[in-house]
Length: 128
Image (cartoon, rainbow, N blue to C red):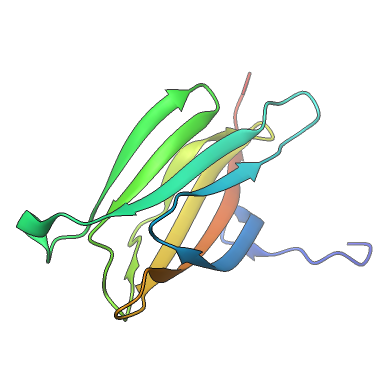
């Protein structure tokens, strides 16, 4: 292991994990770099409210190109948090399937949110 920390969850290898305090009124952009010959993946995370369905959290995806995706979290306003109940497959990085878990906590009477996310690498992809 040579002084590095390696984390596994079952067959998945931790790639990157972090917790951020974000201003929900502005998008948060995350860049993930793979191998030298791969394009950088760009994820744009934003938050919206749907006044017609206030109690129903949802997420929308907009694919903006081969390496760019927008993720919109809708009604993620729970102070205890809204999270992914299942791992979410996003694409391919480092010739392996890329997965993500997330958890978002809202701060009452504020535009601030705590955005926790974890990216894992899964099985190898041939020609990926």
